[in-house]
Image: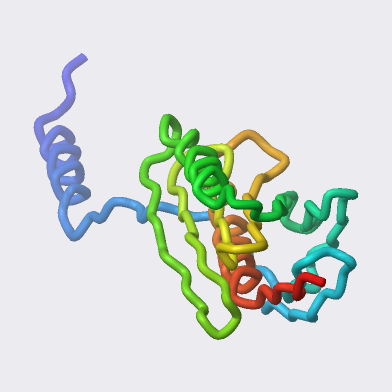
Length: 188
């Protein structure tokens, strides 16, 4: 059975008309998570350093004054490692940089930002790690003569940068604030 010519003409016209107009590709979607504005309080501990802690974080100190700041609502943690400087500042700096650059295989980029606060006697480096690396941010901070502190963000999930991006950005800002609020205790 043959279709009449006018039906074929109508179908062809309909198909051609449906292709007209401005067709745009769908924009890329991103996970839309929002977190409360950070609220900080100064921590006091028996260790040689103190800092401002976000109300979302719960800090646990270890015997050696290293600490873990858990963020249950973000499913992540910031791990802090404290070391005393005993004429070994170069070795401590090398270890901190080596730890960061172990992520280079999975990272798309590692951006270094120097930190200097002469008033507080705090000097360091903040590393912003882009991509599916195990840690999205790391830092070290020191007074270069007595105290040395490193920190790293880790999430309790397989690294997928697109999925953890909002939480990673929130914690990056949090550890920047932590670095800026460090207060060293004077040696006795």
